[in-house]
Picture 1: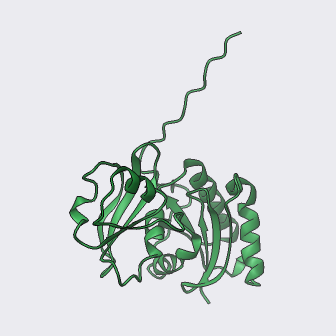
Picture 2: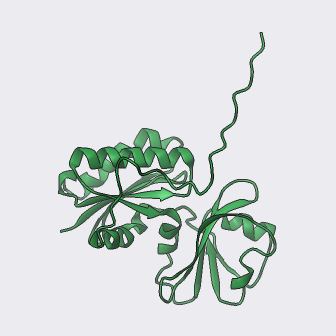
Picture 3: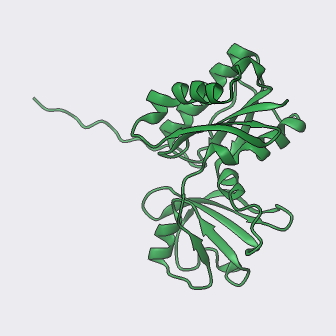
Length: 228
């Protein structure tokens, strides 16, 4: 057995899954507000219970590394690193956009996959993949949407999906694209094959130096001054 625990916390959906050589064994998830902080460890325990296995049996732990929610990514990574240190297991980092794309990796109706994650206002995180050979045509990047976004793929049977797809469709309608607006959030159940491939190739992360892949600098709000 090659059991890998996958943790996905990049959006409002918090999910955990257990795979054996890429095959789904168990999953547990929550979309409750604050689930990342309050329920993540409980979801991990639930998955282990459903699979009737111990975390010590894992060969590795996979984490969705970003882009996505700043808070969610940090909670997920901190939890994964803690498990890796405690269990002496390697850490595997998986791109959130690749996790989104993995849902459609076996599609026979499209040539191009374009995951789109909402980054507020008119900005999104996105990447472009070719289904035929899983080639990355455009790496993950932040993009301010306009009427010319993804124009190079208008005649290439492209599928646009993710929790930023609705915003793009509403703002710049384009009948040449196909949209999948259901199940818009990345899920741990789609991390299995990606994580197992990384495990086979020994693509492990440094537990001390790894940080979430935000794709852009965090700009927090300055606290307002209080006057007496």
